[in-house]
Length: 368
Image: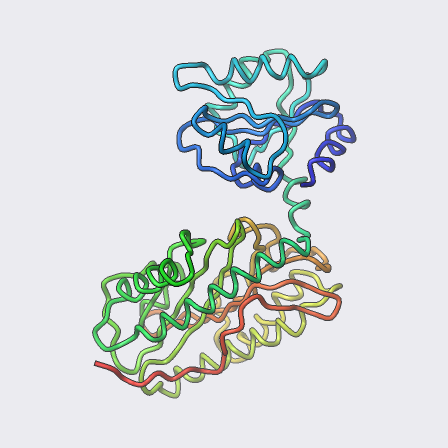
């Protein structure tokens, strides 16, 4: 589970201990997932000693029954978790002077408690960038899980399209998607709140579903995803309910052309900023550049948004095994919004999407 790589990094970087506090990162290294709520959940890794998972007592047996085959140490609500962590660190490691922490995650309060137990130690080193890059390259097993999440997203689109009718609210459509995912596919967690936006609402990219009612001859934008065996999907489609206007058709076709061009260009050797430009240049040339107001894409894996960012100014060279979204959008305030998005993996032959819902403009008949 890549713990050996983390231990090697500790040795190479001159660190003695890594304190992993992000539950998603812990799951990545151990295979054990849980939500600690307000309690303490951590993975403590040493450069030359056996690591341990630290969790609430009520989760100890669950952790022991998971994929994690190392030590699990628990604590009661009435106990001081930081003192127990410190005692176990001292038992295992002769050296614990240099600590690496997840600066992207560890709260100030928890940092102060941990540092209070090791007043003479340094906590200045950040392990987050190393973990970020380690998670950048997906294994075949991870890709299979991402494909599974993609298949669930394709199912969700079908449910959503079928739920559109005159007067139905965005919230009702989103609720139908979430409900059917649960009862038909056993999906208990979406990767983010299901987004359904009709008409001018779609010009606000991250506006959640509202009580706005779908009306004839509007574009309806869907953005949705699921968690499948710990891995996320994230995909967007835009459909026409009734007869689209020439302007609606135009912005849809420009966005579709931009997305397809970027998918075809996403091969090993191109940089993130070059890929962003492939799509952005098409939209700009068509006269809609000012309405493409976000990056082209983001990484995906155990989190719905991961490293890298496919954006102008990022000179990262794309390589095989990297997984990310390609999602150009055109958002015209007061009129409409279009976004078409697929996440996928870079292979030696090109970009392979995890979602396969058709991207020709789908025109849905009016329904009462």
